[in-house]
Structures are given as C-alpha cells and as structure tokens.
Image (cartoon, rainbow, N blue to C red):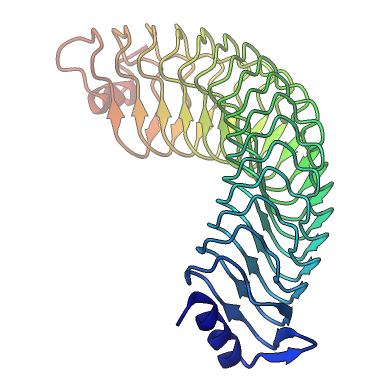
Length: 369
C-alpha cells in the first residue's frame, strides 16, 4: 500500500466515517512514521491526532478540532496554516522548519511545543496555554507575541534574545531563558511558581528578577558583580557560581536547598543566608575568612581552593561532608563541632598527623583554647 492508502486504512480501523468529504474519528488517530507527504482530509478527531515523523510540508487536510493532543513534529513544515483552531490537549510542532507561528491554534488546553525550528518571532502563538510553552532552540530576538499567562513552564533558552520584554507576567511552572544574549532581566515574569534560570547570558545585574521563586534560581555563568535584585526567598537551589562576584550582599535571606557561589572572586561570605536547607558551596574563590557563613547547613559545606588561614566563622553544624582542602590552614580551630559526613582537610600546611577526630577530641577536653 502507498502511504496514503495505509493512512486511510488506519482511519477506517479507528472507526472513521466520511462526513461531507472529511473523515471524522471518535477517538485517537496515529499516522506517524508512514512517509506521508500530505494528509487525508480530516474533520473532527475526538482523541489524539499524531502525524509526526513524516515528510509533510503542509498541514492541509488536518482536523480543525482535536479533543486530545496534536503532534506534527519532525516533518518539513514551514507553516502551521491548516492546523486545528482548538486543541484540547498539547500541541507539538517541534523539529520542523517553521519561521513563523501563523496558523497556530488560538487555544491550547495543555502545552505548546515549538522548539527546534527557525522562529524569529512568536507572533501567532496561542493567546492562552493551560500547560507549558516551549520555544527554545530557535532564532528568537524578542518574546513579542508570547502568551500573557502560562499555567506550566515557559522555556525560551538557546535563542538570540537580548530582552525579556513580552514574556508572560505569570508563569505557574519553571521559567528558563538561559543561553541567550541577555544583558538585563527587565520584562521577566513577576511571579514564577517553579524554578527560574537565566544562566549563560551576559547579565551584569539581576534587577528585574522575580521577587519570589518557588523552586530554584540559577544565574550562573554571567558577568555579575553584585546580587542586587536577587529574590528574597528561594524554595530550591540558589546558583550564582561562575560570575565575578566580590560580595554576597543582597543574596536571598532564605534558601530551601543548595547555595552555590563557587568560582567567583569572593573575599568574604558576609551577606550569605543564615541557614541553608541543603549544601553550601563556596570553593574556588579568594576567601581569607569564613565569617558570614551560614550557622547551619543541612547538606555539604565546601570551601576548598581558597586562601583560608583559619576556619573561624564556619558553620556550627554541617549535615553532610565538610571540605576545606587546598587552603593555607595551619590549624583546624573553628571547624564545625558536628559534621554528619566526612571531613576533608587535604593539601593544607597542617602539622603532621592532624585529623579532625583528634582535633575534636582535644577541643572537647578543653586542650584547645
């Protein structure tokens, strides 16, 4: 059978009936991977409609109403003209040759995926998306035309964005604008229910970032010299590693999980959160003191590869490992009294035979002043 004959056979086996020259199917219809260059004329499809992994250059013949998901990914489409007006589930058009979203559905009940195309604009995108909106890995220089509100995630990473103007004001899930050319976060959503990532850009400031982030906040590998504008509270990880920070002033006051500030130019930990639910990583800086470190760390505490001559100011309690290797320590005075995991002090000029256990025992016996 030809690809079209195979498609018609599947339509009939799915209970399809011709109504005014168009096939109507009560449930789902799967026409993926048949080598189709065009679609059979479709009316309404009650369930999912999948026509991905074909050789389609047009959506002519596609159903105008789909109760479930619509998937036309991995084709050779340059336009969405002919796509359904309304999709009850998710709409997938990723990995095509789309330069525009003209013809896209007006309303999508769940998520909209248009990543891995050649989009230079989001004009024509659905006005309302119940789930996530994914437009990463395109050629976007602007977010004009994006939905105003997204119930799930909004991913616009790996584009050529220089501004976030036009981004949704409210995102229920994660917001990821990493790997662009952003120099500012002005225009970012005011509220993000999940995580926020703006890593691998050219940011020199966090002004414009959301005030509160329910998940993690990552601004790693930018050109930040200050954390001014950072959220006050982060429910997950806070990652500001790989920047040019000399201070942690204006860091979040509360971090639910891990705090990463390694790979900067920090000389002090003043401004760090007082308590961190997970690990605290401040290695590969220029620290000469641990003053300002959190008093309690639920996970690991790594301060290796700095210029420390003392552990004064270290947390009182560390739930995981404590690593102060590759410094200039001659004593373990100031080390935490409680370490839940392993204690590492390698590559320091400590007296031969110095161990954490031995130091801790002597400290408890009052031999160390």
